[in-house]
Image 1 (cartoon, one colour):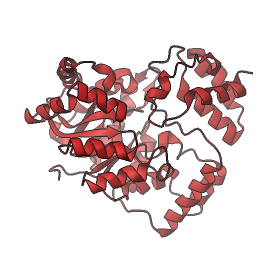
Image 2 (cartoon, rainbow, N blue to C red; image 1 turned 90 degrees about the horizontal axis):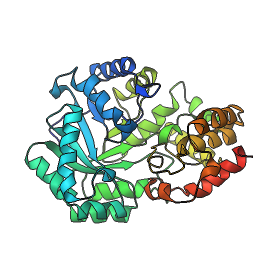
Image 3 (cartoon, one colour; image 1 turned 180 degrees about the vertical axis):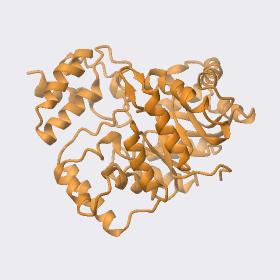
Image 4 (cartoon, one colour; image 1 turned 30 degrees about the vertical axis):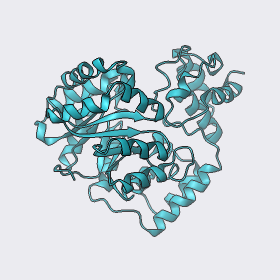
Amino acid sequence: MFAEVFKKLGFGCMRLPMNGEDVDYTEFNKMIDAFISNGFNYFDTAHGYLQGKSETALRDCLVNRYPRDKFIFTNKLTHVYFNTAEEVRPFFESQLKICGVDYFDFYLMHAQSKELFAHFKRCRAYEQALQFKKEGRIKHFGISFHDTADVLEQILEEYPQIEVVQIQLNYIDYDDPAVQSKKCLEVCNKYNKPVIVMEPVKGGNLVNLSEGAKKHFEELGKASAASYAIRFAAGCKGVFMVLSGMSDLSQMNDNILYMKDFKPLGEREMQAVKNVCAALKNLNMISCTACRYCIEGCPSKISIPDLFACLNTKNIYHDWNADLYYHDVHTKRGGKASSCIKCGKCEKVCPQHLPIRKLLEDVAKEFDK
């Protein structure tokens, strides 16, 4: 379907190497160089990633250092940056300028759900994106998606021009009734839409496994936990790209090791995945992926994903460091879990459909004693 040539690993640029509040350009340059020198070329970002620093870092470290035909650049149209039809084009033009490119290879309608799809329709965003394609400003038009399979089918029925769909897919969410990864994948296959996978390691939750879970992978050999998660996603029918949010060179090198010459999981490896799923589901972890969409509108400035990570760490490892990070790091910069005023803004934008207000009560019971 695409004229471009891809390896199946994409560089997701939502979690880049950081030096304080800024992207660590030295490390990012090394990662990009390793990625491209090993035959990979797909980069994914959005304007809101790292408060806009993802786009500028890609401009400075990728666009200004490599010929345009050496990389595939994907960006997105996000709902918080336009309220009317008239605001769509100026925002799109500003993205091209910020990123230092004349066109995007892929341009996605970001985080589509039933509610956000209605907003995009009111603003004729799909029609305008298709016009950008006619103008040669984007090569391929698609969506990223966070909702149920029936909503995805509705969107694909209304806009058959969609060329590609980005969905959340990993082995723990595959049969999850809330995320519906498998069902969404089946809808994409039904409509012959190539699939881009986001959150293959579920925001790191499938990397930092409990002792009871990771032993199933350790019995297979020395491969990383991330390798099984990413290869699971890459082996699913219809998947042409798996995004990995790599934040240092060691993660990059690990991903390259098993994705340069990709092989799907074998029978023993699939059984290990099933065993890990069973072990993880017994832990009752908060399934936050740390996308951080919830933070921007929080009136109490609560660093919600970080507080959830503290509770997960405490529950899994019973580690005193969780208390240290909660009290001396994350709530020093923002509100405590008990600061929640129950406004519900976070829950409206959560791709995982988490009951965040109730979960913050659980966090407060543990840490705000």
